[in-house]
Amino acid sequence: MSSYPLVRLGEVLVSARDEVIVEPTTTYQTAGVFSFGRGLFAREPLIGADTSYGKLYRIKSEQLTFGRLNAWEGGIAVVSKEFDGMFVSQEFPVLDVDDSRLDPAFLSYLCRWSGFWDLLMERSRGLGARTGARRLRVHQERLLQVEVPIPDLDEQRRVISRLDSLSAMAERVGSRLSGSGLSDLVASLPDFVDEVIEACSPRRVPLREVADLISDVVHPGDDPRPADRFVGLQHVESHTGLGLGHEELGPMKGRKFRFAPGDVIYGYLRPYLNKVWVADCHGLCSVDQYVLRPRRDMLPTMLAYALRGRTVLDLANERTHSLQLPRLRSGLLLEVPVPVMDSRQAEDTVARLDRVRQLTVEAVALRGHQDMLQSAILPSALSEVFGGVS
Image (cartoon, rainbow, N blue to C red; front, side, top):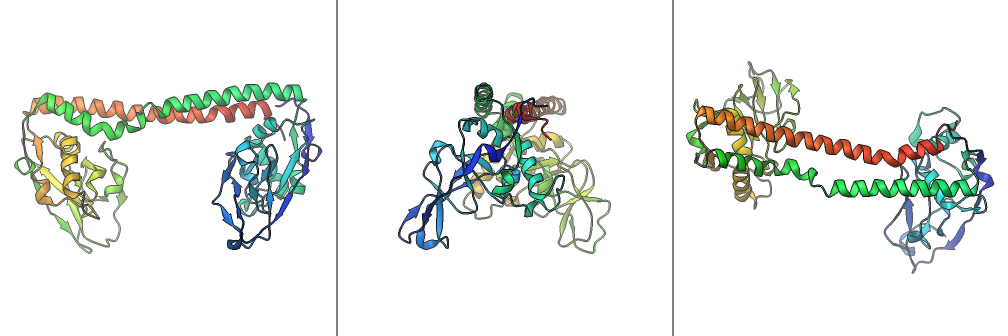
């Protein structure tokens, strides 16, 4: 719990509206306040003749402003230098900070603390009332009644220095993560696939020589058995071919293709999405997917990897790039080159490709975890500094 004394905001803030009458021929640079402690943002310049506002309010650096409609969810901020001289509407109260008792930089960090937002919510509806939050309005009088932890100025400056360091560290970590390229790993899988396949077997033949196109159509009212689920393009992850679930069969609104375990399902609508997977069940898919049945000498998983490789992906994109709604015709798909190899070699190649895919998926998951930790650095520090206020 914070050991800092609680101070009512009305003791350190005072209303300070610099009112400006809107002139029809004047252009005003206006600002708004993001939710969740993200500060101010610049709106499109506003011409006086294009607005119903009769007056606006000029804001100055180191003042506090907030949105009546979103302050309870972090729509409150100290004005930074780049917004000095901009304007806000009457929906954004503006207050001066008594810098003899409160450093604006300390207040700025306080505005980014989620516990402060909770206090604003409670003040707006009464303690503990959380229902109908979207209708909440934070009025200036109520905000000034809120008590927040404010130490003496020397301690405020120590806190500011510490939080500045943590904030800079979080930004550096975020910059390094964004520059690591991990977010592009999944999109690079087609290149990895072709590299592995080329190293194992450079020989390729047209797809029609190793697989058959199956058009087992099920119309509304037909018995879909043995299919017991629907798997559409939305249920297949791009580039990895991993499943993202399915839908239970219900009343059909259109025709579908039936598939069986071991079939390779290729998404030919927007082929740049690269959605290719191996069926492990009986089911139905959309007519935006081709059902390919590998012949006995072609391992289904090997064929699926080949169809997700860079060679096939580039050919598909090349042959559909001029179309408004890209669809790869079956005749063109059946002519794309795919690798051929004996069964033992195919199994070894698939094992290597499975490992590459697994490492890629794990790296992306790790990146997501890193992003989560990086984004938690400053909020955790704010909770430690201000936390425990009730």
